[in-house]
Length: 166
Image 1 (cartoon, rainbow, N blue to C red):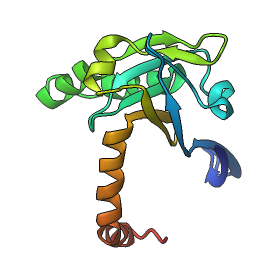
Image 2 (tube, helix red, strand yellow):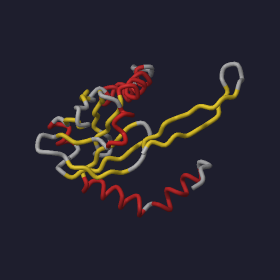
Image 3 (cartoon, rainbow, N blue to C red):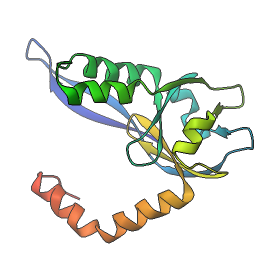
C-alpha cells in the first residue's frame, strides 16, 4: 500500500508549509513465470511508472526503482568526490542497474543474470521499501524475517537510541 505522510517544513523564506510524501509499504507473495516475468502488485503499478531500474541489492534481493527515484540516487552519488575509492566502487555498483519496461499486464521481465544473482525462482516476495520495491526469493526472505524476529528487541533499542519511538 502507499501511505501518505504529512510533514511540516520551512521554505527559504521561513514560511512553514505542509509537504506530502508517498511511501511504499507492504509484503506481497508473487510468482515468476518460466520466462522470468513477474507481476508487480496491482496497487503499486500506477505509482512506480512504466520504466523501472532493476538493481542487485546488497543483501541478496533485487531492488526495483522508479526512474525518477533512481536518478536522484545516481545524482547524489555522482556529486560525491570520485577520487575516493569507496565512491567509485559505489558508482560501479549503482551502474549495474538495468532498465526494464512494465508491460500492459503490469509485469516486468527480470534478466537471467539478475535472477541468478538474487537466486530467484518461481516463488517470490515483493516488499515495499519507502520509495522502491525489493524482490526476494521466498527462502531468502524467510531467513531475513527469522533474523529480524530474533533481533527485534535489539533493533528496538537501537531505534530508541536514535530517539525513535515504536
